[in-house]
Image: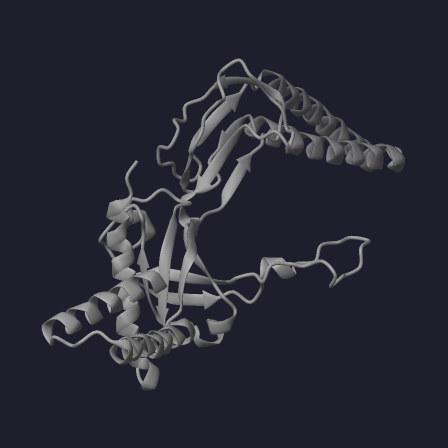
Length: 318
């Protein structure tokens, strides 16, 4: 950014010297240099604190690791990679034979236990049967009902479904593979489409001038020459560099931690899903915290610089 401003000012001075035929000597050069230092320094200071920009912005999203609840052989994988899915769509199926057999076994045992319980209750009413036997069969029925509920849950878990709207980015599961409920070895990675969020990291100094509702502009390297409008949704109240996790180590200031950037959530006027960018791409963001008053005029310079950045994306050659 500073380089662009210096080049622009240099080109302006060269034009003025040529058009007005100003002699080049130590006084005119000193005046041009000092004028550039004062002008550019003034603009940079106003932009840095009242119209801050960030090149550390990215579209973040939440991924769900798909781990089956039951163990078994995969028999069907109807899902295709990177195709939109609705909540409840089938991802893959596990052979339900042993789990269905367990449900049928428990259903038969429960039916028999309920019949025996009814007989015991009828015997106690008519012939003074043992109260202990009645309570014992009630306990048996309750236990079988709990086991049957668990068995039905396991049977339903043989069909693994999408937890929300989104897509599976990589599908490496094939029929015949063994699915194991092991959390450190997920079967798939599911991308939650509704969680895409643009987050920009700003230096701590201008963070006090960034408030919810402030106007923002965003440029993506994937769309050279285009600028997207938006608003600040929220300035997050915590920085990752200050996180303390459960540990026996005490807090030490001898270790040097990075300064850390303040996370700011940006809502674009255009929905992220309509832009057509893959989630996870980076961006450049500018926030215009003061649109009136003495420092309000520097916003136009920030807008120009941001557009120069997006046009410079055309110059990336591969």
